[in-house]
Image (cartoon, rainbow over all chains, first blue to last red; front, side, top):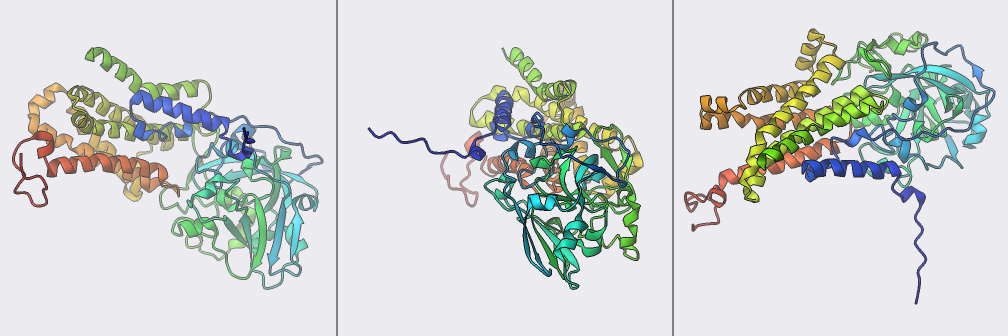
Length: 318
Length: 211
């Protein structure tokens, strides 16, 4: 008798416990209502928050003058509420779906209009400069905000080492494309891979952060590990996650959300209370953990970037 | 028997609210509880609208006339969850700022559509009593209550228009609604099969010619 070895099942293919429990939850709910046809909706976003594991500590953090003194949002909120469409369009799901995401080995390709094309290991990038803790406000285009102690250093440190040519006017960031690991990429809700871009002077601004940690620890997978950017004066979607490529170009890149809905999301996407999203007002925001809404500040309160946009019509360049 | 069943269904319909209350009590509504409450009450409004629209097709297809006794309750629950959903907007999103809301309704089509869907339910809830059926007369009452089709349609469009990129959840509702409305269209075009009344032989496109 031939006994076959059980086929290997990659751990990423095993339904996670929380998914499994969700499924049970909504089956129970729909059976009770006799509405099997509607199963999966309604209770969907009520997934109980997954346990968030602690990551390795990052030592020797420098304080930053850019840090806000506002109350920091609890770690568990920042690590369980993620707009990360590569994993899921449901904000509560990336935490569990990204649990087994492989962040090593990880290389970042630096190419385009540079003197020397590079392929850098993420660990070598992290050693380019002393890590700083930067407590930034982070405003989502959807109207909520958080305060996060990110860990990283100015993006300019990486750009300087890449030695971009004079012709390079923009820099483009590409997120990993790996539908095997990122289940959200198996559906084309957006055009994959995710692409974001900055004007060169924006990217060189000291506030623009190359980030690999938060709350003194290595970045959780659902927050964009191993390497992301953080641009506190822009809506959150500009801050690309899980970056595998940094390309210097002459022409303005078309970022993914702009490509998806150009009348709603522009290239600049600076936080601006005076320019509404076509479908909702941007005048106020809900800081997670607060009941009321607070007024949204121009450039999310980072007035030091205003000079980058002097003379520009921010209504047109939204 | 039916009375007992009604009590059970009544309590089951409170389940989604109880579930929300329980999660809130345990602090398990996640990082953005208000968003969860808004989405959940919105989802359940649509679910109850679709449930109430399933009563007639199920009753006829399964030949279970007693199902109709649950229709009013399901409809009122749609109105109940719709009211909660609207309240999250009025209170937790706009904090009773009426001019902001009016500007929203005028300017943002998904809000316009959502408010329309709700307002259409108001007369239906008000005239859901036996007294009103009598006062209006069965035929007129029935005509009025066909507004529920428009309300459900507006509700689904409201959802479609508000999503950022992932249309799948609202399209699930749209699919079920299409099915339920298609049933009515078919039943209206070919009343024969269901009611067994007049001959259809004269209707163009009718395949059944004999009774």
